Image (cartoon, rainbow, N blue to C red; front, side, top):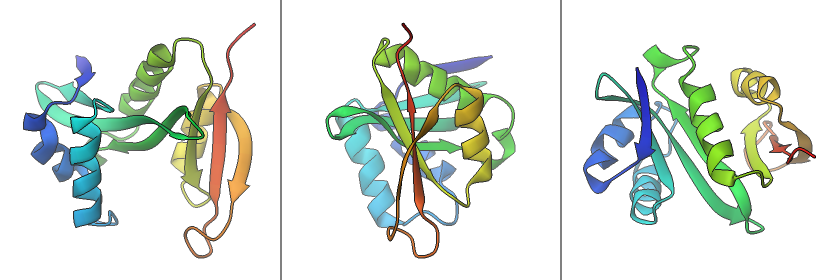
Length: 141
C-alpha cells in the first residue's frame, strides 16, 4: 500500500537517495532540505520505504507548481508518480496546478496528459537543446 505524507527532516537522506544520476548533486540536496523545511515536500512510501517525492511550491508566479517529481527507478510505471500528482491536485483544492518537464522526458509528458493536464507553454534555453514544456491542470467548471 502506498502512503503519501508531508516529508520531515528525518526523510531528507532517503529523499536524496532517490535522485537520479543526472541530479545536480549538492544543489539538489539543498533544494530537498529547503522544501522539507518549508513544508513543500511530500514523500511516497511503500512498505515504509521511500519510493518517490514531490515538491509542491508556489514559485511560478505565486501559482501551485509541481517543481519536482521524483520516483525511484524500480517504482517507475507502478502508479507512484500518478499518486503523487493526484495528491498535489487534492492539495491545490480545485485551483490551477502547473508543472513542467523537458521535451526529452516522454514518460512525464504522458503522465501529465493522462491526468488531464494541458500544454501551457514552452521555455527555451534552460537546458541546451532540451526545452522545458509547461502544463496546467485547470479547475473544473
